[in-house]
Image 1 (cartoon, rainbow, N blue to C red):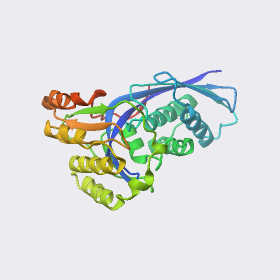
Image 2: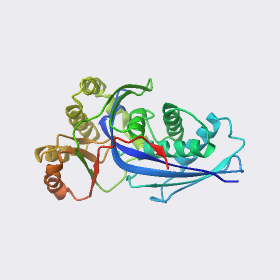
Image 3: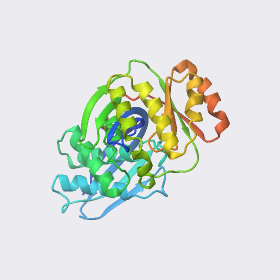
Length: 289
């Protein structure tokens, strides 16, 4: 037997990093992860391949499928073979885990042919991410921005969406990606918690609609406590970006840029080496393929 589901979810960048205080916000971008889930008649056996980065651990794939099958009461009926493919660099602060979890959960639900709601799928992925040890807070903000697109502001501890903004502007999103991976599970959480009150204030700023300013200040604050160079973001701002800051726990830096200033920001970043990825704001929901 072969029940197959395919789905795509989109990437995201940080506006407010929730690790310090549990309050977060993220912006959906058009980078993407596709997942194909083929259910098998070998219960308990879940195999996965990350086609775009075969050296990476597949524990998240296994946990998401297992949590999904368990949620629908069919863990003793099916196993699965899963493949994912993505243009999101892994372990750079670009929500690769949240995006993969969304795509895999949605593909598994599609393969099962069951009806459920969006937040159920998101929460299955969040639970699986915690179980897999790839996240500190569950990254509910990242998962929601990946799944719904646009700007999503959340309370991660309550798993509550506080507000969704749809930016009117058609900005580009440039991402500076230095070499080297930084896994969230190995982040210095105690240092991040030192700025909890400041991040709570920035969360309120984002909720009020001043989300670009909040993104920049959040990125500067986390850069200081985590020891990253804040000049990468500042150079983007001086070159015309409306917001720029560390994404997640880094090391990537994201900048929201008017289309006519993209080359200026690229030029400002050219001295740092590494890779520059160009994307756009995503307004599309995760969906089956």
